[in-house]
Length: 331
Image 1: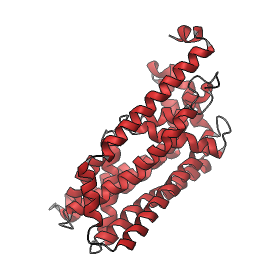
Image 2 (image 1 turned 180 degrees about the vertical axis):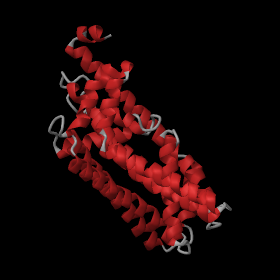
Image 3 (image 1 turned 135 degrees about the vertical axis):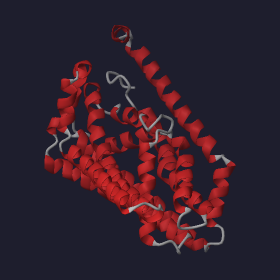
Image 4 (image 1 turned 90 degrees about the horizontal axis):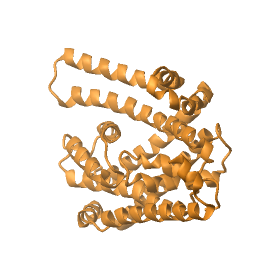
């Protein structure tokens, strides 16, 4: 296959590159159009704003969109920082690659397309290592989700489910061990490189994982702090909308259930474009313990899903045409 690729002329590569770009753009546009035109989504959104003061709704939604932009700009900074171990990329190139990755992510399982959409902006020789470097940033985000989520699940079980003290102790112990394990592994991420080297059928790809050796403890702390800022931002989005529509909800319970929602989202394999249904189902069941306004909760989840994933994906689709698939042409 590689030899056949080498036989392609520059013009043929350009045509194939253009066709791939058009295919990605068409798939993303189709999926987005299907979901945006879904009447159930529109009805949920109407439920959210019904009965509220119009100016409050408008300014709240503006704030949610601004927070979304700040959130993804932080991700751009993080990606530029992680990629610097491989090659120096400008903020603008990092910006394009992150938003292009979001477009690819919406129609691929577990956002796997985000890797391709992002690393294709790197030089071909750095792309495989770039995917591993990107994984460090995603793992930092997962650490926060896992720590907050596991401890919140322990709280939920002890508060809302009838369990004896011995079971509660066991649940908290498991949650702490689980959370601690993620933190330890993150700050020793180079262990993954060592593990890959010890597994026979993975030895071929070990060179790609060597980039993990280049991230020092202080650098990993910087990446984790960036991820924490993002975690605070998208948690705040939920809090702002919930306080607007359901002000009677107790703040602590509201926040801890948001953490559980994030945890479940990270654990379940799904497509971004269908993710709103999973989020809505989980959220409505969780929040049924503290409110009867389940439809309002589903509307909030759908709104944030649209702002945080669909809007950036629409914007990112224009950068699909900036990808150089083969790296050796001007495509």
